[in-house]
Image (cartoon, rainbow, N blue to C red; front, side, top):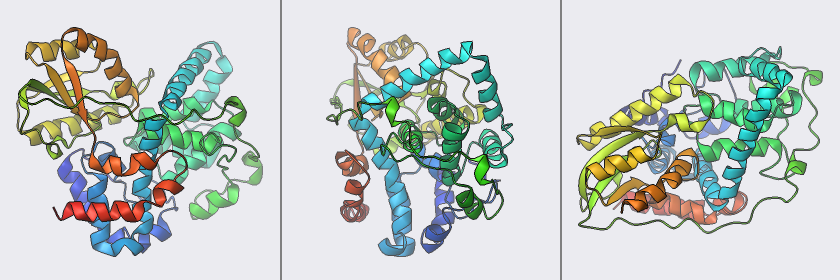
Length: 408
């Protein structure tokens, strides 16, 4: 079983180890789910990328160096999908807020619906009687990982065969995935449900599962629902309109600054902090924000280790904060006499919601929250307004900018 050690050095080692497979081997083998401990044709780098212990740019540069842009095209495209999803949600934040509201409504219904509680427990513990689904549920809980193809089959079965609320499924994934990301997780579940690409749900087909598990699972046609339409009727007004990206405050020089490190970006040394008057540094534990329900201990341990690694690389005395009452964030900054807090940009998701709740309290104490977006994100996000096609057209430009950046 591949163990994810949440350090930058482990992430770089895993990236280097997989670089030889980022070309045609990945393209031909990436759709096969061979089971726990045998995911050899996919990189399993996503937990490191999710925390930015390694960056998308670094991973793509490794693929280009090993294979060139043509042979590595499929691998590169899949890495860029992650940026597309983040940008798409940034431009449609109401989709995230709708997910949170709907999930909370589903959790209220769960308390009063005994049958739903029973069916949910059977699904989450892998006791439905459907072998493939049960195995994936147990792998997810046991390892914090699931092959991408299995994630889509699982979501489709959850929604259409088991007829469980899709948001509770997304919540189950988010509570257990080491690479759990608000944008990718929410939008993949919406895609399976037919809400992202509206009217085009993802069907879990018996023959497709048998083929791409190499016969490890052979569900019958009768065991799986025939998917003829998605859940688009639940959102009759369609998608919200595309919004401009959120305004951010830039750091001012010669102002006492508190440096905040979160798992949204653990590579703080990439940012130019030399000109900042840093008076205090802290890490912020946030894994519990993923859900009102208990979050996997493996997720918490991975994220805490990533924060510890980030702090060690900064070489600074670092306080440890937990995202509970936002007043704690204010108290930390005020004690250091900071007038601004700097953190790498935080996209829409649970931490963004928590920081938004903290903003008025910070402002009341004369403290400004400052952020900075990565150049990599700004290559992708302006084009992430509709389907992936608009971003795919930009890939030659993105790769040129990536290679130019490496030569600086």
